[in-house]
Image (cartoon, rainbow, N blue to C red; front, side, top):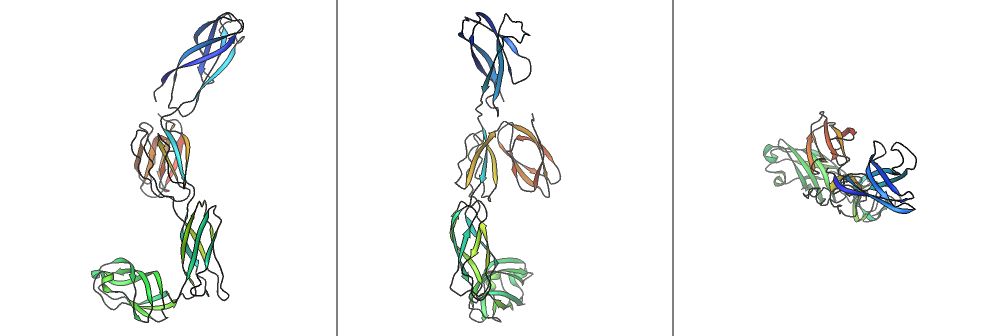
Length: 388
């Protein structure tokens, strides 16, 4: 930071005609500079002193110059006849620190915590979404109609994926016995054998003991003998939840309640999942370099960046000016479990810097206060001001 020449003007009413000393200092302690002497007309007329000073326009806090005016007929050490004054200099730093917080989001979807039972096929009970500070989210449920719920791999086959191992996504089931349709699975092949299934879409019109397989081409090559037997179905259960409107401005997780409980059966329960705040172009750093597009982040996440211009993200984010980018401290960072990247604003250049933090090896860095952000595996151990 480079001090800039300025002037401090002190005005007062002088009753004494003659020389007056103007003594001043920066802050509340230390010696006074009494080198400024002016002659006043006295008799209750105004008098003025213009004093050259040095100020730091890129400081993060105001500077207060304080002092007093005293007729020179009084000894310098005398406390008699002193008229105190204070002048505050408010800096206008070229680069500011902004906290950008993911403050409100929409609903992204649901997790079925209990599918319930006894719901009528086609009834599509609605989900009431309440609380969370937002509004407008709507959803309803799809009731299972003979979809696969559990299964047994009767014969895993051989030779799939050329005898290798891989997971194939959203593979359609091919009925061998029965008329069920629309079931899709993520299929794991280990050493050419089908070893694991994850249900993606349960389908409809299956019957317990129905069997199905997968096309060889869907599992990466030739093979034979895979047979999967249906063990149970999800008829009358909540199969999925369809989001009709994501709503907006949710500041916490709302509660989702499945409406119209069945007369015979059990009530289904769901958990609401929130979306992330949409990423945005943060703009320029203190040197006019592009910071770049920041990623989507969950509710409560805070970006801390230094920029000459306030960022303009979407309405999901709040932007708060949190000081300037010349307030430097020594911060010590330590990785808790793994090597991770830490980003911060450099005190010397004002630029965004990203470094690799090696797990178990603390690093002490002179950084702009509160400008850092990191993977949750990092801990700020020590933060003390100032640093060179």
